Amino acid sequence: MIAGGSYGIVDATSGSASATPTASSSSPAGGLGSDKGDTLVMLAAYHGHPQTVSVLLERGADPGRPNDRGQTPLAGAVFTGERAVIEALIDAGADPTTGSPLAIETARLFGLDDLVTLFEARRQ
Image 1 (cartoon, helix red, strand yellow):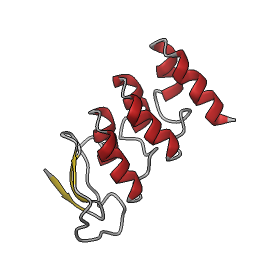
Image 2: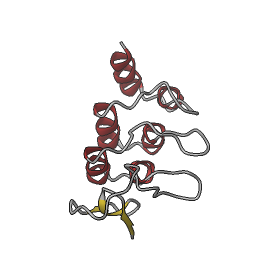
Image 3: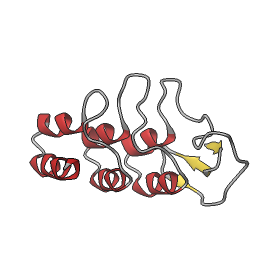
Image 4: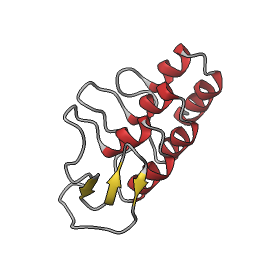
């Protein structure tokens, strides 16, 4: 279980999120995440927890913040096929053309033409 920041109680890998705020922090993420720079949004996105992603985004989490390897939550969600998470991140302003690998290139690699079309439409 991870707790803290302005998010409330969150376990990003199991998808458990409480809307009850806890002590604030100077940064929206409260400095929470993995030792590889994965934010709570990245962890929740990769593990397929759209409700947790939505709670974090509603509370000000950055939908496009990359981890220490340059990977974004959107690319992680594309890699794992998490459609509801992808929609939540795109709706929050995640850019499919940032990070490494790019989310749009990941979609192309896996032959996810509908996502490529969605990403291209959002870029224009």
